Length: 369
Ligand SMILES: *Cc1c(COP(=O)(O)O)cnc(C)c1O
Image (tube, rainbow, N blue to C red; front, side, top):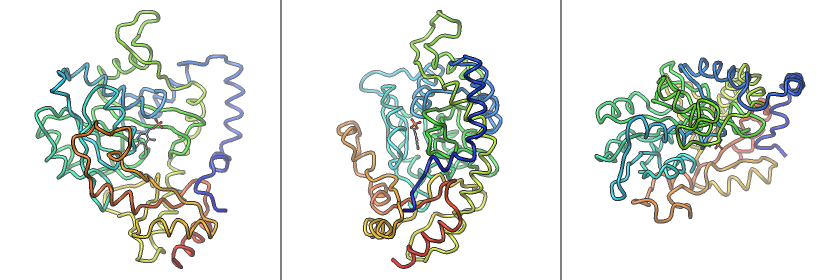
């Protein structure tokens, strides 16, 4: 069976370094917010072309803490009938929407562009009301959103941008990296992400020194001086051990991304035209967290591949608006483009563990379908 992902295999080339550093970690005996987190924060800020990076517990917390910090700095005060509105894509992973709900704000879902699967700037503008405070573009599948247009809209209506860059470590648009466009931006280091830890992890990037201070306090019980609590905070710190592993992997992130880009190129050049392939556009450096194709007979295709010993995934089978958790939460529940994407999309193997021959095998079977 050709697996969709094999995390043991994908991490194998790092084992030796992981083990060496793990032994040092044991000897040191410093487990929370130590030197490894501090160094990783410096290195990841630099990698992501940002002034500051704050390590947190996971990607969801990153987004949730950002919104809480923004509400403090920019006064998102609201009464119950006048909830602060935040714009998100209708086909995102549910985490983006949960971060908004956790803060008591209202998620306003906007349809994606059917060609890129990223939020459609034209639709963003239509969804803006006097209650809108922020736009959360999600760089889905490792492709940066149309950030020039989104920034134009944000400037025009005086809105903040918060990137959900959980799928886009190292992706860029016009040579500007994901995680450097917004006022503050969230990353996840969930093990399957392009920069994956060996457990949960996340980070926030920002160029704003005041937000940096607020977020640092929020992730650590709302405290910047031990046992003095200024804010109602969270316990959401990037684990010292995960930071140790992440520092090793960060050095190879470009290599991981280039490997995925090389595999993507093989798909793009060899899959037959029956499949709707990811678009490749000038000035976009995509990192293919996911290689998603579309086909009207998606379910049969998935079955066919499985019969031929090839595992695939669906990102995602159910659009957020149709999730039980969001029943009665959203104003609008009809999102035909999101629905179409969710019904026809299929993720093909494209991991660091896969070889060019693996991809050629997938292509061979796909082209028979
Ligand atoms: C993975 C992911 C998240 C959440 O990350 P966790 O670390 O699992 O909390 C958020 N948004 C998107 C788009 C993701 O893919």
